[in-house]
Amino acid sequence: NAGVTQTPKFQVLKTGQSMTLQCAQDMNHEYMSWYRQDPGMGLRLIHYSVGAGITDQGEVPNGYNVSRSTTEDFPLRLLSAAPSQTSVYFCASRTSGTYEQYFGPGTRLTVT
Amino acid sequence: SQKIEQNSEALNIQEGKTATLTCNYTNYSPAYLQWYRQDPGRGPVFLLLIRENEKEKRKERLKVTFDTTLKQSLFHITASQPADSATYLCALVNYGQNFVFGPGTRLSVLP
Image 1: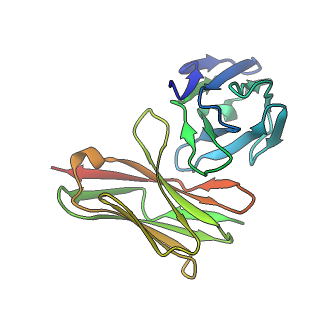
Image 2: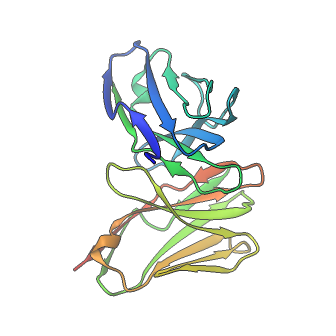
Image 3: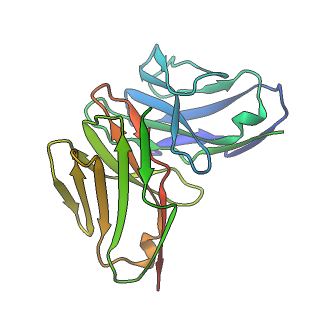
């Protein structure tokens, strides 16, 4: 099993550009989430999904969109990048029966 | 507002000693509390979960305590090794299955 994979690993964007961060898992997990991690702050939840076709907002959803068309994939879209979105982004998944989250390796995003 | 604090940003200890990390929270009633390990440039890795009605949980050299009256969890690593050097995150989970993470404590175990 590859677990949770994320691409790209690094990305630099200019203000106003859009992009999609990819996340995939091969563990057949129902729950998937996107977090951002900033220095001195805990992981903050952006969006999450409890199954294909179902998504909901987390703590900091503004400026981001998600969709979940399959169990495996959960892409995160930045609509118009802003410097405040410079961060490390983590995707995580888990089954509905446990609270153990499996995290991907992260995407380091810089917006200039 | 809800707040989670971890005792210090960084903690240095000598190899072989017991490392104790603290997680304090306010304005929150978690059903579960978790600890994760995060190495530089990597995603967090789950270590332990303790339920609100459990006082203590152990796994090999790791021990977690949970005091819902004090709103505090302690995370102990006994016989610490340089390989235990990492950032440790605590996370609260409520009955709505929402996760809230603390900022982490960076542990350095010196040989």
